[in-house]
Image (cartoon, rainbow, N blue to C red):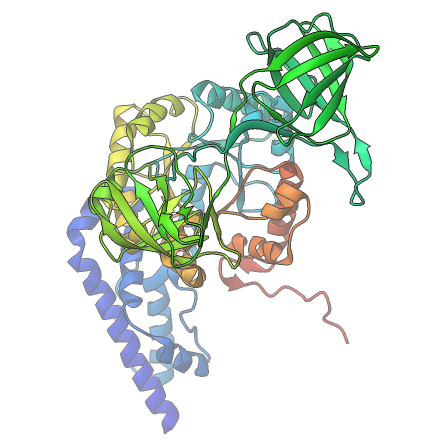
Length: 612
């Protein structure tokens, strides 16, 4: 009978899968010996899972489904136990003697418990109403604003993320201190994660187009004045802080502001040759506050004449103003030069016919790029908005042909990320700055995140440094943000299990640029599968509910993404003016989704619309 042949064929295929999984573990016995004893079961399960996934089993899955058996769709946490159970059922259906199954490292219960335990050891206890944690990136203001930290904790923050690429050690310590005080007030624990910056791979500065300030009053869509611009005039040599609500601060030289009175009028000619009148409305200390209902382009060195009752009574000038830069415009087919020299970047120079006579150029902050990049390698800039292909590299400059820009052309700014997805840069994930920062953050952090992980050696380096600092208690979070790290992920996971606790962050922004946006969903799925097989917790990161955090309203796509994030053990939110409300919103989404999913397994509670 056909059903008997199907059972026999399926049973033979499953036994073969199991035999190969056990053999694969044996081949890697030496690597298992170096794994921490409490994580060896997880490492064995990972090896079994890797062996199973080396084969395309989609046909086998269909056969299992047609027999009413598990189709192996959610075997990550307990791979060998799943194979044993399905084989036992098939043997019973076939009416053959049960085979002696190999003892699995974990069963259906212990596999999930290990993942939960490893998550708890890394991130701390789970909140009361959900298992998925919420991580929040701290803005610089958190160093001074203790109330903001307390509000985030009340809203549902489970991990405070401190980005060591910003602020300084004193600011990080204040953020941590605010959190520890807030914990006492709110009555709940929150872990602290410090993100090491890693190698700096960015565009350099751009030469300014001038030194001026653009000052605009507030107007409605019809152009009617809503509020004048408020300008704080303060001595250039002894600046005083501006009062709240100030539109702009201008330094002045060549005279004292103390004689000014409310009602005095300042006459000036701005950068465009427009006559402008500023009215003094207040004076405080050695400074004064002026208002204007017109847009002003104030340039350094511009003279002011003070009128009182229509009579000139004083003069002074504007002091130095910061340079104003414009992004470098780029079109497809043009050349962009990346320079080792840190000279300010500049736009292309064109002749009268519009032809480029000198290409645009900008500094690349990573010296290793000039030693490793080859002709034909791809380069992405500004989170993948601008793409190019290397046409030459002489060790001092890399010439690119621009191949991809937005529909209206590219606009490249300073301090934007650069990705070389085809280039093995040979970088250590820990820079000298990272090592200095690490000595500071281990004093208060529960977790340290390692940026730009590429190989198991990077994991070993961080573990060694933590041990040398006597910080073995501090967990490691490995940020997977480049194609090399993804390719090496199985080896990275095995190495990380030597020194638990450990977790993985799916840094989807840089990762999408490296592997291609069209492959991101596929890649993040594979990362989730592999980490679950190793019982390693995952952080779902990059632009989660970004619109809500920054503007107060999420898009439908963002809400769907937040729902999908419930499959990870932690979700990261970036900073934004509406971040407190965003934490509460995400917490509500995650609580609701726990009624419907356990990782990728659907939980079939009673439908809300189950009656006709």
